[in-house]
Image (cartoon, rainbow, N blue to C red; front, side, top):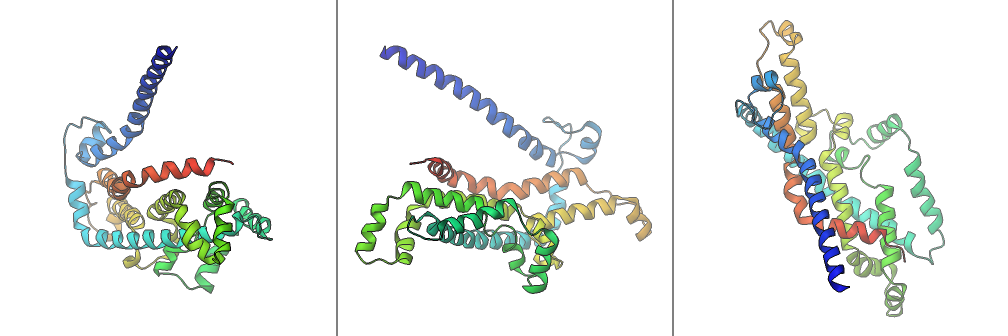
Length: 299
C-alpha cells in the first residue's frame, strides 16, 4: 500500500513538473522574443518580422538609448524614489487601516469596512480626481504627483492585511499585551505589524509594481521633463521617434525623415523597463507566495 502511494506521488510529481515546465516556457518565450528583438537589426525586423533566430543582429537600439543615458538615469532615480517612498507609505497606511478593522471590540469596524469596500465599487472619476489633486493640493510637477494619486491605498490590500490579522494572530496574544499595559499603538507597532511580514511583503510587491509601471500619473500631472519617471520617459521617447520618422516632421523641419530603429528601440525600452523587477522579484517571491496563501486561510 505504501509503495503504491509512493508510486502515485512520484507520478504526480513528474506530471506536475512537466506541466509547470511547459507553462514556464510559454510565459518566458514572449519575454525572450522581446529581448532578442531589441538586439535585431531594424531592417531585418521590418523585412522578416520577429524571430528567435534573427538574420542580422544590431546594437543600434541600445546605442540610441545610451545617447539618452542622462535622461534615463534621472528617470530611473525618480521612479526609484517614487516606488520606494510610495510603497513604504502605502504599506504603513494600509496596515494601520486594516488593524482596527480586524479588532472585534472596535465598535465601528463594520462601518469602516463598508467605506473601504465602497471604494472598490465606485470612485469620483478622472476629472474630479484631477481637479482635487491639481487645484486644491497643487501637486503638479512634484514627486507627490507620482506618489499620492491612484496607488497610495487600495481596498484589496487593506482586506488582505485585515484577513491576516483576523485569522492568523490569536486574540489571546493581544489580550496578554493589554494585561501587561500595552496600548493599541504599542500593540500595532510591536506585535501586529512585525507578525504580518509575509502579507506586508506581498502588498509591498503589489504596490511596488504599480508604482514602477505607472505612467498615468506622469501623463496627468507632470509637464516638467526633469520629473519624468522611467515609464513616462520611455513612452515620450517612443512618441518622439514616431514623430521624427513621420512625414509631419519632414514638412515641419524642412528635412528628410530621420532613420531611427523605432521597433528595436521599443523592444529595448521594454527590456529597460522590466529589468529592475526581474532582478528584485526572486528575492521577495517566497514572501509573496506565503503572504497570499496565509491571507486565504479562514479560521
